[in-house]
Length: 152
Image 1 (cartoon, helix red, strand yellow):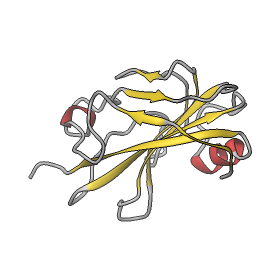
Image 2 (cartoon, rainbow, N blue to C red):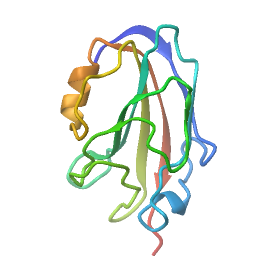
Image 3 (cartoon, rainbow, N blue to C red):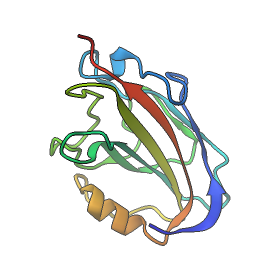
Image 4 (cartoon, helix red, strand yellow):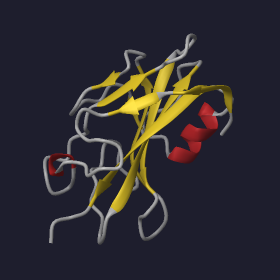
């Protein structure tokens, strides 16, 4: 995907620090609700935000945990919320799927994109369709990575 303005979004979470463990309540072992995400340094001209949460350590290739687009440009995604349109996760369902690695510690990439448009996509689109729609509309992007390992 092409970013046509080279700006980095500052993505953080009050729920976990970068490269540290995501609390259990956000996982399949807890309430399985999304953690809060904060986005700063949003460029002028941004019309919407997109969030893609993925686990590249999954045994069968990257697993998509949440696809969310047309998020308002407030810079806040609240805990346990759906502030946009949801797409299909790796389980084939719309919505947030919490960390649930089969073994070991996995890395969860919370990628946020600032777009110069609102996307005209149906609820339930998959990541391929989402990324194609975002192409040439990305003003900035950023990410925070969290870790998770199931309790033994």
